[in-house]
Length: 111
Image 1 (tube, rainbow, N blue to C red):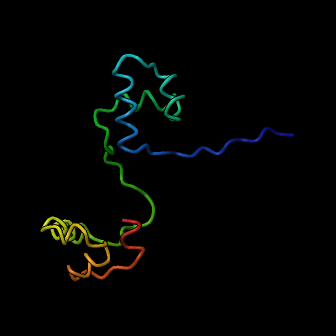
Image 2: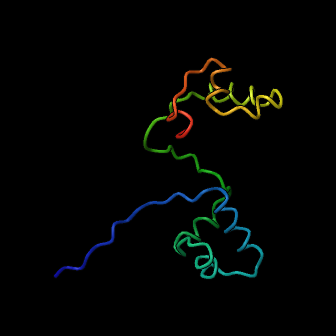
């Protein structure tokens, strides 16, 4: 019987995860193997994470489903939320309605 090949999946680590790895490594108390065991991030990924200059995305375009809201619409929502207490406490759907932006549940779940 032929050995079963493990399917490779690419994972993009979040900014907080990358920051945590760098912080632990730069503290000098942890080596890459210990960090890998502690965080669950594979040791093979450590070198790339530690060499990267920024903890944020490296500019690669994200594949997958396109966004439902434009950047301008997101900016409108943020501006409305910053106006005051009422804007900050509104649920997303009501905030969008206040900005005259048509939204559905999927708009603000996936964006």
